[in-house]
Length: 149
Image 1 (cartoon, rainbow, N blue to C red):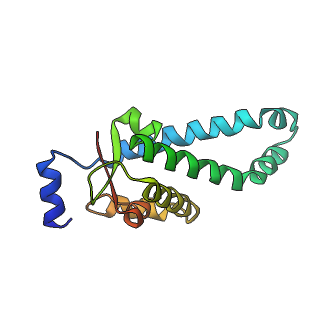
Image 2 (cartoon, one colour):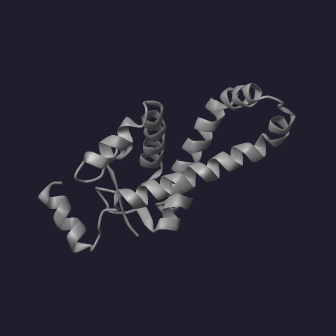
């Protein structure tokens, strides 16, 4: 982390969110979105009689699920600075430049690269665990930080 950013965070009394909080927020968001998908496809899931049919049904909606994740992440991060999972664990996303909630383009960038990182075996998330500023690939591309609320 550069000295200027470190000084700005210290001056504003902002601390980086730890990996445990971020992981819990991720889990909450994933469970919420999964339940929404299952609720939307409930009739199809109920009519599926084999495990293979359920897997096939789930696989047929991967694109729609990714779009749902992008919209969810972008909207909540832009509007509230946090998704429902982040709100629950009291962390939020800020732009490095302004130390405020990300704008529309930054939030959309972050949401898209988050899904890309997930598709690449979560390597971007692993990167964030080893990065001193805890920035994942989607944080790096959007120039954001996840901090304690």
